[in-house]
Length: 130
Image 1 (tube, rainbow, N blue to C red):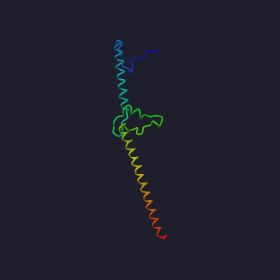
Image 2: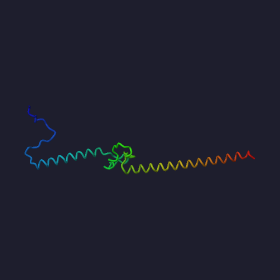
Image 3: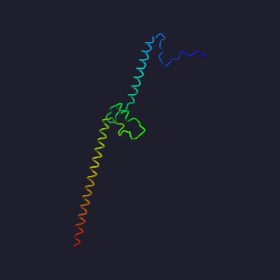
Image 4: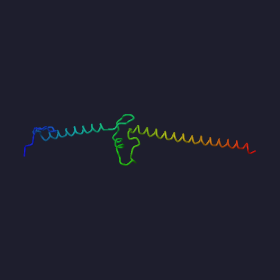
């Protein structure tokens, strides 16, 4: 069996054999810290931002809008932060209330026109009855 090729560069930094156990633990902690920093930076790069105001989502908001299998837990505005979502929901509710009010006014106006038309028809026909 041929001897392993030690001249090929490896991805890991070579450690001197003379390192003490304390020095190895310190190097391992340092490597762990760098790995955690890199993972945190990658996570921040993936963090969504609000389409309205541009603020980054909080961890709770990000978890709330992530994909879920059930549509029951789906957020109404998954692309908005919590503040913008609450404003959007309030605006939709106000628009719905305004639309209901407009429809009610329209219905009352039509009923009044129908009554007026019926009264005019009655008075016009009553001329020929006498």
